[in-house]
Image (cartoon, rainbow over all chains, first blue to last red; front, side, top):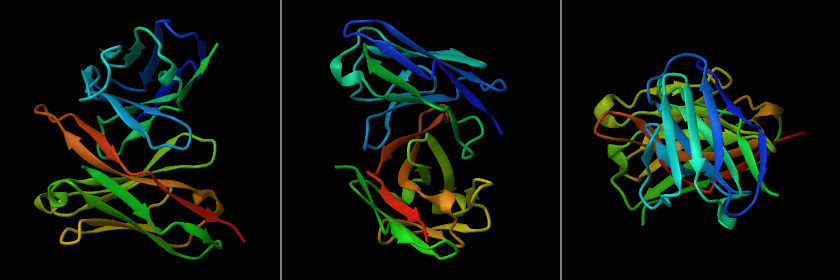
Length: 108
Length: 124
């Protein structure tokens, strides 16, 4: 199975900060990476698909990049509603999806 | 409004069975493959299984952790997907989400619609 390793596992930041979360795949997976946001007690929400495509309705401060094994999710200017846990997911071996372990973004 | 609603969760003893339902609305359910994803308390997301649409044979795939115990089916006339869970173990305790699989022009796949989840607790 393809393993997805996120870093960091947790992150403290302030409103207005630029934040980057990294995801590394255990093998080359082209651009088959999606990013999700999950708030406590809520379902995951799709933010980015195909590594860099912004899902409809998602604010443009979210962006994704990468190809091969290394991928990043960037939030250009943190807003209060962005404090959540973020997961990467590989869809290279669809439907055998695997998720990263998550990055918890907390308020500093 | 495009929506998925899970139901059927609850408290069940180890070794027993439970069937979850995922009711869809707001889109042509039969056109889409459906996934089940779970999240154990305080843990991350784990893909459980998948069912293709009728156009692709209604075939299924499962994670190794549930293969042989869980079965996914669908009733397109009712816009419902099911997750039949047998021989439940304590480690199956989780919130279970269903999600719709979508794709773009270049066949990159992603889960774009999620239900709110239903909680399954396996305990004696």
